[in-house]
Amino acid sequence: MKKFSLSILAILLFATITSAQTAYQGKVGIGIDGVNSPNLALKYCFSDKVSSEFILGLGVYSPGGDASVGQTKVTGTDFRIGASVLYNLTQGDFIPYVGVEALYETNKSGGFYVKEPDAKNSVHASLVLGGEYFIAKQFSLGLKEKIGADIQLKRDVPKEETDFYLNTATVVTARFYFN
Image 1 (cartoon, rainbow, N blue to C red):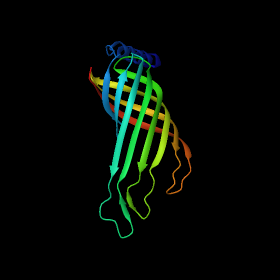
Image 2 (cartoon, helix red, strand yellow):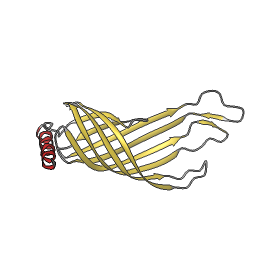
Image 3 (cartoon, rainbow, N blue to C red):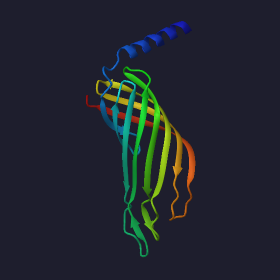
Image 4 (cartoon, rainbow, N blue to C red):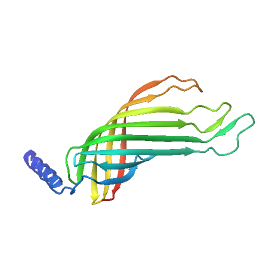
């Protein structure tokens, strides 16, 4: 039974690799990267093995109602920008990859404040392990795991020092490729 299972697995793996996407080089894809506050991700494939992503995200929160006397109503914003370099391990309908990603984020909390807080800035640097599966010639769904550092930078109001966290994140992706 064990040999039979390994044989089936080998056949499926071989079929996936041999039904490869043709000419991955030069492909340009645009899609979402994330679920609850998705980023817009533009992916460019330099070659069959190396690709890069440019990531851009924006979140806006506007509290309802009016500010009471002595308070200021602040609309919250969350802006993210980053890039990654990925190395594709194989070609086919399923393309696993490894890489690195850096993301800069600035976040201003929304709400009602007596003294308006400064924006909170952070840098996220991660090792990326993932893959994307082409469900059609130009459309893929993917999953990636990010393992890395989250550096929360110092701010004055409220007084906060620079903090360093190690964290992981699982991200769902979907892309449409133009060529």
